[in-house]
Length: 70
Image 1 (tube, rainbow, N blue to C red):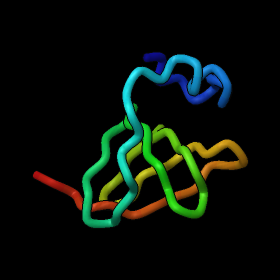
Image 2: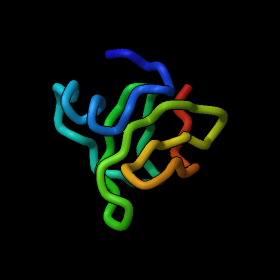
Image 3: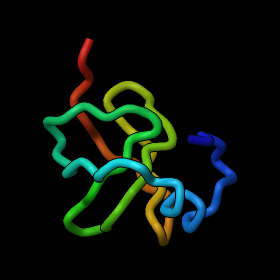
Image 4: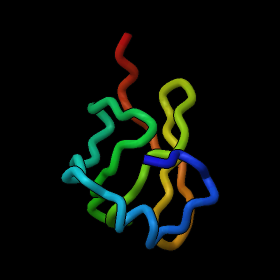
């Protein structure tokens, strides 16, 4: 999977090989994961910093929280 931020939404969805994980703030996510959010729909984790993840959704990039596991 190309983790380049310049990849288009349609290219990401075409290259998707796994099911999306249901988004919950109590779960941990990693760059490259696909998530399913009840409001925003399908998303791709393109960045992670602390307890936040940067998620590319079809309409825009959003920052969500998640549980950091060490």
